[in-house]
Length: 367
Ligand code: ACO
View 1 (cartoon, protein in one colour):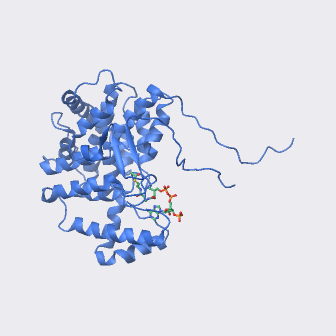
View 2: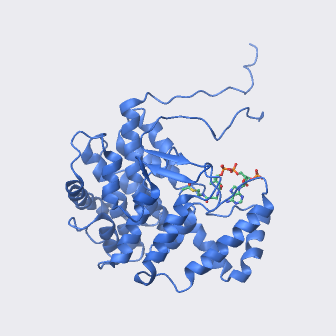
């Protein structure tokens, strides 16, 4: 292949104007609709952030309490699709099974469609995990908050306040993040006027890759294989010697620490004994993180490879007893609000996204 002149990862290309979120990679700052991450994570509920993201994109958007009630009803409504969870779907990866159930939802552009889409990953994630564990899915309780209901559907009993707060902080922290790969995919699909369900399915499909939202599951594999801080350096160097990437490190935009990493670390610490976190687990993860940063700096001195959101995502979702292969589903449960808002914004103000490629193949043979 001839060398690509330009950036095949589209670095630095502005492909949308958005009022939704701003990722400042040099300063390590995330702003979501005029609020800093610190003003939202651990401070606002997921429903409040859904309201914030959807504001101006639906004429019939109610105030947050009514929106939360409508989201609860949407959870109860989409639960009917769980009946389609057969052995073949259960045998797929958790994110593939959730995606397959999501594909059963009707397409549309209205608030009802949007709320079903926000509700669905939470309901389907809990159901898929339980069916894979040989347990019966649990129907939603429309009167609960979104995070509390997701945990109740997962565990079969009410979660502690600390766990609910931890999951709320997570869902809020990952709700939107500029023009990341899955949001770009969702906007491209929305730009064809295919509908919100199609845009969200595209978002999920992009999210599941290990370079994007598929990273936190393997972080647990890495921590478990390292086992003890004394093994960290040798294990990490061995992984890089094999040409592997260290999951939970590096980012296209952040050249300093991803602010979401610290927001989630705070959330894990705040959950403390009110969760399933193993004693010493956070301190162990911090030791592995510190060793990884030293190894990455030594191996890639010209790059600034810092901790990204996925490292402490792994710790937080593990503490909430989600199995690692379902972490991406929980990410999707948070990010769907962002995908929907971006899809609405694209349709409202944007045109069909249709860039060009430069043909570098052979010319047709002379006749
Ligand atoms: N471990 C080891 N080396 C890395 C890592 C890593 N985690 N990340 C980047 N590098 C290296 C690459 O090998 C490459 O080195 P080279 O120039 O010597 O070949 C260099 O840094 C640049 O890598 P690119 O892939 O060009 O950078 P990009 O901006 O595309 O990378 C990405 C961003 C994909 C996130 C990358 O850092 C990575 O693969 N990280 C691990 C997976 C991960 O944690 N993904 C979650 C990201 S956060 C999110 O999407 C929600």
